[in-house]
Length: 388
Ligand code: SF4
Image (cartoon, rainbow, N blue to C red; front, side, top):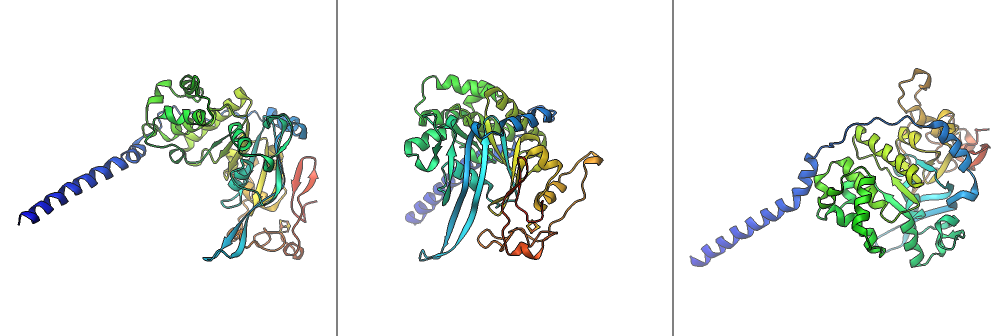
């Protein structure tokens, strides 16, 4: 009898302990759901399209490039249980882009088109299968153009100091159990730049529009927009020359999105940063970017200056994407092109032009031969047999 009572007692104690632990672990998430953005709603600043257009033209010179890819490919093998290769996912397949200093290069396309893998390969986080990524003289220590494949561990570490990354989900990017101060200082600790790092962290918070006292709070005590500001502050900790912004506003409310976009524009102007801006939202791409590359199943199908691409899209896929952008101006409205079918699997892309099963103007030749990316007019490249 005594044994039964004792066992019962210990079961009760263990249950109380487990329930308390579960509550403690889920607290930050509950807080984060409750928190609301306290910032004032700002509307997007009038985009300085004239300046941007000029900037795009002036910067479209190879001599100012920060990063250039040549026939870059990143393929992932599909293996069975025993490790035998069954096929390949061609996430990035022969991409040529040039990112010029001080500009914003946009990469747009549907989910799974290879945007993020391209960015990860540029960062050296994915090993390329073929082709090359060349760092401009600004990006390498000895001021010489360098192939990223030739970098050793120290070189890759240095590269990551020069390129900051901002991801889509700020809550996922921050550790809910670590103070903001320690998260902003983390890159400085890793790169051994500890001197004066607390002051630097305060400066960074001010730079992104937060109060220096916020250093001593946890991420769950902030709204979504404020958390993304913290992530941006951390990305700037090592004074990078370039930021890769991977869907930085997709997880935010529309009103907060505009605040973050304005902040990014201000920071670019102030710090002379170069951006790679990845998004599936064409309105955001249009507002932010100087040049834009449209990706479809791992390949670039159109690349040109943002204004040219949005005012006169040439590739049928780009035309369909642009036609879906809502506009309040009746003159800017286009007839909506609805694409039939889903995006095919990158593990088994259609023959010839990968877009042919969904293309409204496809011809017999389109399913046989892949169209090269050709310069149709100065600075405007398209991969379509029918665009002259
Ligand atoms: Fe359409 Fe053919 Fe042009 Fe491909 S090559 S986009 S299928 S017209």
